Length: 120
Image 1 (cartoon, one colour):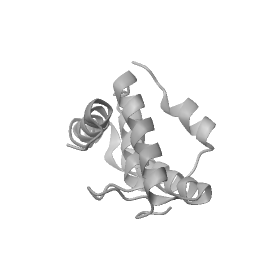
Image 2 (spheres, one colour; image 1 turned 60 degrees about the vertical axis):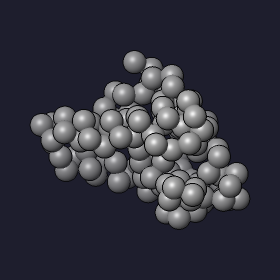
Image 3 (tube, helix red, strand yellow; image 1 turned 135 degrees about the horizontal axis):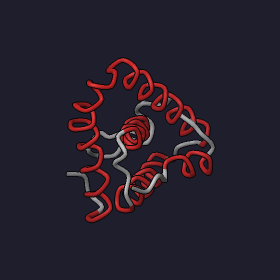
Image 4 (tube, helix red, strand yellow; image 1 turned 135 degrees about the vertical axis):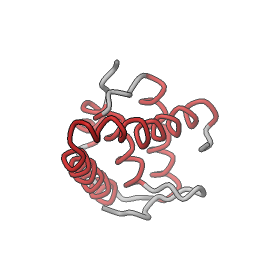
């Protein structure tokens, strides 16, 4: 497995809070995209297509929404905090179901965006 979330977060400047900022036509906002990649990272599901899909979708949302860097940073921080709370709230046995549901859905969205540039 390739862990690309940490370098991406460091490079982008750890960030996150504008829920609707940068929303695309499917209604996926920046905070959801950041939350999804955090879940995929917790679950060890990040591979190259997932990482590239995240990168492309994130930057497409930034461009479409004309999002300020501080808004992206606020969305990223809020998403990371939400993923952390969810992880600790579920415990070890609950994490397996979280990964099978939310983690798999996140991977599907990023992989689909990587392959087709459209959400499933």
